[in-house]
Length: 266
Image (cartoon, rainbow, N blue to C red; front, side, top):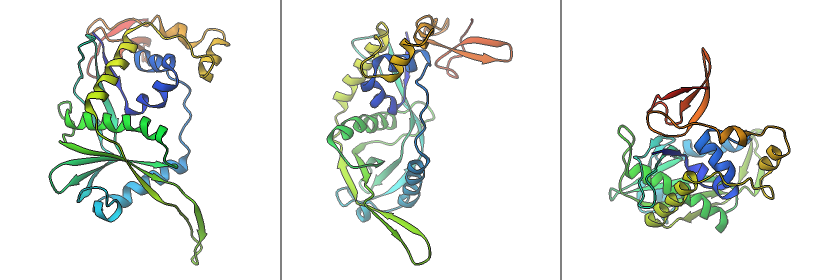
Protein backbone atom coordinates (compact mmCIF):
# COMPACT_ATOMS: atom_id res chain seq x y z
CA UNK A 1 0.00 0.00 0.00
CA UNK A 2 1.13 3.62 -0.55
CA UNK A 3 3.39 5.37 1.93
CA UNK A 4 2.65 9.02 1.17
CA UNK A 5 5.34 11.66 1.54
CA UNK A 6 3.96 14.80 3.19
CA UNK A 7 5.75 18.09 3.72
CA UNK A 8 4.61 20.27 6.65
CA UNK A 9 3.81 23.21 4.35
CA UNK A 10 1.41 21.07 2.26
CA UNK A 11 -0.71 20.46 5.35
CA UNK A 12 -1.63 24.15 5.71
CA UNK A 13 -2.96 26.36 2.94
CA UNK A 14 -2.73 23.77 0.14
CA UNK A 15 -4.73 21.11 2.00
CA UNK A 16 -7.32 23.57 3.27
CA UNK A 17 -7.37 25.61 0.06
CA UNK A 18 -7.95 22.90 -2.56
CA UNK A 19 -8.14 19.15 -1.95
CA UNK A 20 -7.99 18.57 -5.73
CA UNK A 21 -4.63 20.34 -6.08
CA UNK A 22 -3.37 18.76 -2.85
CA UNK A 23 -3.98 15.22 -4.15
CA UNK A 24 -2.47 16.09 -7.55
CA UNK A 25 0.75 17.26 -5.85
CA UNK A 26 1.18 14.56 -3.20
CA UNK A 27 -0.13 11.54 -5.07
CA UNK A 28 0.85 12.31 -8.64
CA UNK A 29 3.65 14.89 -8.39
CA UNK A 30 1.69 17.51 -10.34
CA UNK A 31 1.87 20.81 -8.52
CA UNK A 32 0.42 24.25 -8.96
CA UNK A 33 2.65 26.71 -10.83
CA UNK A 34 5.28 27.88 -8.39
CA UNK A 35 4.90 31.37 -6.95
CA UNK A 36 8.14 31.95 -5.10
CA UNK A 37 8.25 33.63 -1.73
CA UNK A 38 9.49 37.22 -2.18
CA UNK A 39 13.23 37.26 -1.60
CA UNK A 40 12.96 39.85 1.18
CA UNK A 41 10.96 37.45 3.38
CA UNK A 42 13.48 34.67 2.87
CA UNK A 43 16.26 37.13 3.70
CA UNK A 44 14.52 38.26 6.90
CA UNK A 45 13.99 34.66 7.98
CA UNK A 46 17.63 33.84 7.28
CA UNK A 47 18.84 36.80 9.34
CA UNK A 48 16.56 35.84 12.21
CA UNK A 49 17.82 32.26 12.28
CA UNK A 50 21.41 33.51 12.24
CA UNK A 51 20.80 36.04 15.00
CA UNK A 52 18.93 33.72 17.35
CA UNK A 53 21.35 30.80 16.96
CA UNK A 54 22.85 30.12 20.39
CA UNK A 55 20.69 32.73 22.12
CA UNK A 56 19.25 31.96 25.54
CA UNK A 57 15.47 31.64 25.42
CA UNK A 58 14.97 33.86 28.45
CA UNK A 59 16.58 36.78 26.56
CA UNK A 60 14.05 36.84 23.73
CA UNK A 61 11.00 34.89 24.98
CA UNK A 62 10.48 34.79 28.76
CA UNK A 63 7.41 32.58 28.26
CA UNK A 64 9.70 29.69 27.34
CA UNK A 65 11.63 27.54 29.84
CA UNK A 66 15.32 28.37 30.27
CA UNK A 67 17.43 27.01 27.43
CA UNK A 68 19.20 27.98 24.24
CA UNK A 69 18.63 27.76 20.49
CA UNK A 70 20.77 24.81 19.41
CA UNK A 71 19.40 23.71 16.01
CA UNK A 72 18.45 25.68 12.93
CA UNK A 73 17.54 24.88 9.32
CA UNK A 74 17.85 21.13 9.79
CA UNK A 75 16.34 18.55 7.45
CA UNK A 76 14.26 15.77 8.98
CA UNK A 77 12.26 12.71 8.03
CA UNK A 78 9.85 10.73 10.18
CA UNK A 79 9.12 7.05 10.39
CA UNK A 80 6.02 5.89 8.57
CA UNK A 81 2.82 6.70 10.45
CA UNK A 82 0.07 4.06 10.43
CA UNK A 83 -3.66 4.34 11.10
CA UNK A 84 -6.52 2.06 12.13
CA UNK A 85 -8.81 3.36 9.38
CA UNK A 86 -6.56 2.66 6.38
CA UNK A 87 -3.74 0.34 5.31
CA UNK A 88 -1.91 3.22 3.65
CA UNK A 89 0.69 5.11 5.66
CA UNK A 90 2.47 8.44 5.44
CA UNK A 91 5.71 10.04 6.52
CA UNK A 92 6.75 13.65 7.15
CA UNK A 93 9.80 15.15 5.48
CA UNK A 94 11.08 18.70 5.37
CA UNK A 95 13.13 21.32 7.21
CA UNK A 96 12.40 23.24 10.43
CA UNK A 97 13.33 26.82 11.40
CA UNK A 98 14.86 26.54 14.90
CA UNK A 99 14.72 24.21 17.89
CA UNK A 100 15.56 25.26 21.44
CA UNK A 101 17.14 22.79 23.84
CA UNK A 102 15.80 23.50 27.33
CA UNK A 103 17.88 23.02 30.44
CA UNK A 104 15.52 20.27 31.68
CA UNK A 105 16.40 18.06 28.67
CA UNK A 106 13.25 18.75 26.62
CA UNK A 107 12.94 20.69 23.36
CA UNK A 108 10.85 23.45 21.83
CA UNK A 109 10.13 23.87 18.11
CA UNK A 110 9.81 27.49 16.99
CA UNK A 111 8.86 28.99 13.63
CA UNK A 112 9.46 32.54 12.37
CA UNK A 113 6.67 34.39 10.55
CA UNK A 114 6.93 37.90 9.10
CA UNK A 115 3.32 38.97 9.58
CA UNK A 116 0.85 40.02 12.21
CA UNK A 117 -0.46 37.16 14.36
CA UNK A 118 -3.99 35.88 13.90
CA UNK A 119 -5.93 32.92 15.29
CA UNK A 120 -6.63 31.49 11.81
CA UNK A 121 -2.98 31.61 10.70
CA UNK A 122 -1.77 30.19 13.99
CA UNK A 123 -4.19 27.25 13.66
CA UNK A 124 -2.81 26.38 10.22
CA UNK A 125 0.84 26.95 11.11
CA UNK A 126 0.29 24.81 14.20
CA UNK A 127 0.00 21.81 11.87
CA UNK A 128 3.51 22.52 10.63
CA UNK A 129 4.84 22.62 14.18
CA UNK A 130 3.08 19.36 15.07
CA UNK A 131 4.56 17.76 11.95
CA UNK A 132 8.05 18.87 13.02
CA UNK A 133 7.51 17.50 16.53
CA UNK A 134 6.23 14.15 15.25
CA UNK A 135 9.23 13.75 12.94
CA UNK A 136 11.79 14.76 15.56
CA UNK A 137 10.39 12.37 18.17
CA UNK A 138 9.91 9.51 15.66
CA UNK A 139 12.71 9.91 13.12
CA UNK A 140 13.51 7.63 10.21
CA UNK A 141 16.87 5.85 10.50
CA UNK A 142 19.67 8.39 10.23
CA UNK A 143 17.43 11.40 10.81
CA UNK A 144 17.67 13.80 13.75
CA UNK A 145 16.19 12.54 17.05
CA UNK A 146 15.06 15.18 19.58
CA UNK A 147 12.69 14.06 22.32
CA UNK A 148 10.61 15.02 24.16
CA UNK A 149 9.25 18.06 22.34
CA UNK A 150 7.31 19.91 25.03
CA UNK A 151 6.75 23.37 23.53
CA UNK A 152 5.57 24.60 20.14
CA UNK A 153 5.22 28.21 19.11
CA UNK A 154 5.35 30.95 16.49
CA UNK A 155 7.49 34.09 16.58
CA UNK A 156 5.67 36.77 14.57
CA UNK A 157 7.67 39.80 13.39
CA UNK A 158 5.38 42.72 12.47
CA UNK A 159 7.40 45.65 11.02
CA UNK A 160 5.91 49.01 11.97
CA UNK A 161 8.83 51.45 11.86
CA UNK A 162 11.53 52.42 9.38
CA UNK A 163 14.56 54.57 10.21
CA UNK A 164 17.63 55.83 8.33
CA UNK A 165 20.62 55.74 10.67
CA UNK A 166 23.51 58.22 10.72
CA UNK A 167 25.87 55.87 8.86
CA UNK A 168 23.54 55.62 5.86
CA UNK A 169 21.95 52.31 6.82
CA UNK A 170 18.21 51.75 7.05
CA UNK A 171 16.65 49.73 9.84
CA UNK A 172 13.16 48.23 10.00
CA UNK A 173 11.71 47.58 13.43
CA UNK A 174 8.62 45.99 14.87
CA UNK A 175 7.38 43.85 17.74
CA UNK A 176 8.13 40.14 18.10
CA UNK A 177 4.97 38.37 19.27
CA UNK A 178 5.13 34.89 20.76
CA UNK A 179 2.10 32.66 20.12
CA UNK A 180 2.09 29.35 21.99
CA UNK A 181 0.64 26.35 20.12
CA UNK A 182 -0.73 23.75 22.56
CA UNK A 183 0.61 20.27 21.80
CA UNK A 184 -2.13 17.80 20.89
CA UNK A 185 -0.49 14.74 19.32
CA UNK A 186 -3.73 12.72 19.35
CA UNK A 187 -5.63 15.34 17.39
CA UNK A 188 -2.79 15.73 14.88
CA UNK A 189 -2.60 11.96 14.35
CA UNK A 190 -6.34 11.93 13.63
CA UNK A 191 -5.85 14.81 11.19
CA UNK A 192 -3.13 12.87 9.35
CA UNK A 193 -5.50 9.90 9.16
CA UNK A 194 -8.08 12.14 7.46
CA UNK A 195 -5.42 13.35 5.01
CA UNK A 196 -4.45 9.79 4.08
CA UNK A 197 -8.10 8.87 3.54
CA UNK A 198 -8.42 11.78 1.12
CA UNK A 199 -5.32 10.55 -0.73
CA UNK A 200 -6.65 6.98 -0.86
CA UNK A 201 -10.01 8.06 -2.21
CA UNK A 202 -11.04 9.25 -5.66
CA UNK A 203 -9.55 12.48 -6.94
CA UNK A 204 -11.61 15.31 -5.38
CA UNK A 205 -13.43 17.49 -7.92
CA UNK A 206 -11.80 20.77 -8.96
CA UNK A 207 -12.69 23.65 -6.65
CA UNK A 208 -13.73 26.02 -9.42
CA UNK A 209 -15.22 28.58 -7.05
CA UNK A 210 -12.10 29.13 -4.92
CA UNK A 211 -9.03 27.73 -6.73
CA UNK A 212 -7.76 29.76 -9.67
CA UNK A 213 -5.57 26.88 -10.85
CA UNK A 214 -8.54 24.52 -11.02
CA UNK A 215 -10.43 27.16 -13.01
CA UNK A 216 -7.44 27.60 -15.33
CA UNK A 217 -7.09 23.87 -15.97
CA UNK A 218 -10.81 23.48 -16.60
CA UNK A 219 -10.81 26.31 -19.14
CA UNK A 220 -7.64 25.17 -20.91
CA UNK A 221 -7.52 22.23 -23.32
CA UNK A 222 -5.96 19.11 -21.81
CA UNK A 223 -5.38 20.10 -18.17
CA UNK A 224 -3.06 18.41 -15.69
CA UNK A 225 -5.96 16.51 -14.10
CA UNK A 226 -6.35 14.21 -17.10
CA UNK A 227 -2.68 13.30 -16.81
CA UNK A 228 -2.83 12.72 -13.08
CA UNK A 229 -5.65 10.20 -12.99
CA UNK A 230 -3.85 7.90 -15.44
CA UNK A 231 -0.67 7.63 -13.38
CA UNK A 232 0.10 3.94 -12.61
CA UNK A 233 1.09 2.34 -9.32
CA UNK A 234 4.65 1.27 -8.58
CA UNK A 235 5.27 -2.42 -9.43
CA UNK A 236 7.45 -2.80 -6.33
CA UNK A 237 5.59 -1.00 -3.50
CA UNK A 238 2.27 0.02 -5.07
CA UNK A 239 2.86 3.72 -4.35
CA UNK A 240 1.73 6.28 -6.95
CA UNK A 241 4.23 7.02 -9.70
CA UNK A 242 5.43 10.29 -11.23
CA UNK A 243 6.42 10.97 -14.81
CA UNK A 244 10.16 11.66 -15.06
CA UNK A 245 12.71 12.29 -17.81
CA UNK A 246 15.98 10.42 -18.28
CA UNK A 247 18.69 9.92 -20.88
CA UNK A 248 16.38 7.59 -22.80
CA UNK A 249 13.29 9.78 -22.58
CA UNK A 250 10.26 9.83 -20.31
CA UNK A 251 9.39 7.05 -17.87
CA UNK A 252 7.28 6.47 -14.76
CA UNK A 253 9.29 6.52 -11.52
CA UNK A 254 8.14 5.69 -8.00
CA UNK A 255 7.12 8.73 -5.94
CA UNK A 256 9.12 7.23 -3.02
CA UNK A 257 12.42 7.43 -4.92
CA UNK A 258 15.22 7.06 -3.78
CA UNK A 259 13.78 4.71 -1.11
CA UNK A 260 12.10 2.74 -3.91
CA UNK A 261 13.49 2.56 -7.46
CA UNK A 262 10.48 1.01 -9.18
CA UNK A 263 9.92 2.14 -12.78
CA UNK A 264 7.50 1.61 -15.65
CA UNK A 265 7.67 2.55 -19.29
CA UNK A 266 5.41 5.38 -20.44
